[in-house]
Length: 461
Image (tube, rainbow, N blue to C red; front, side, top):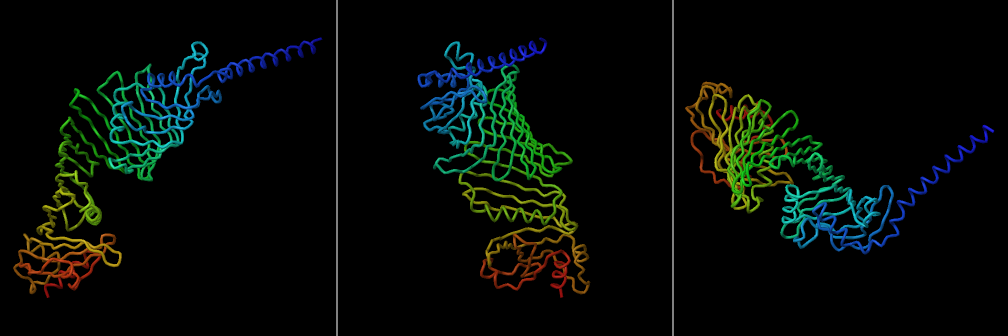
């Protein structure tokens, strides 16, 4: 009898489980019988209301309840603003997750999440402005973008930036009044994590963190709005063990920046940028760097960009080199002008410890057998002759009254190979500085200071 009752209880339990499972399945499946094609307009309006996004030209709608109740939109066009003539994406099989209770009760949509996958999204200057406005002023529920690509088109419809998005989550917590944008992606073959946050209780405050991996660089930005026009913020850039900490103020016309001097700061940036017309006046200080690294970076960038500057980019840039890691060179600067799509050197000098200064006059680049070379005429101003002769081990009998020294300096920009030629004392010979004349000069090659010192010493014989 007891075994019989146990069998009945077991049967009841199995039956109850079956009924519950069947009921839930039926409850979730019945909406698939609805005619969703008549709800295109209602769905579009609800997305506009909850997400402030424009979804238009919706085609077939299909209901699915696994893994959660959702509607598959077979195709549609996505815009950030109705006034944008072109969609940022032609979506395929996007998923709109809904509340099934609301669908049963009112044949209406309560949207919990929108998920977009495997799409190409195209941004123009205009649609990017709509995105910035959406971040700052529009409500959003929960938007997820996965395994997609972001493109930016210039005015000529040319693609200038491509970013792969592994996952994007753009949402608003209506309880805490926080709005967030999280992105994991890849740009220029570098993985990054981006987190943007806006506290809607403090409408004048936003912040973001942008972290690149390999190389590991972290950007942390805080922005305050003093009023509708004036804003101020702080940008902190961390890389290796170095930190660049910048305060800035901006309005509709200018951006002013000022670095905080920290012990760990190898770079300081100060100056201003006018927006219209665009013009910058920036002074930077680079600290505690090896002279070889400075020469390599400067020549590489000067070679690549000296005549390839964007026509709308104009201004002046002063590079200061402080506490150079070298036994003979202590500090220096280069003053650059950016105008007419060209990068020009206006002035420069490098200080030689207890001896004088080096100034670079004419310069050029040339290619030989696939190698790029930089050539310049150098003027060395000797303020302390005794120290100069002592450093370069010049015998007393060979010394002269020398106030200046001139030479042609050459470097392979990809290798630590240097040469000097046409060494003259006090007077600069009338050498016409052009490539044909430079190629004919006998060159003295060196790879380190000891070899350079030997060349200088022998020039006094």
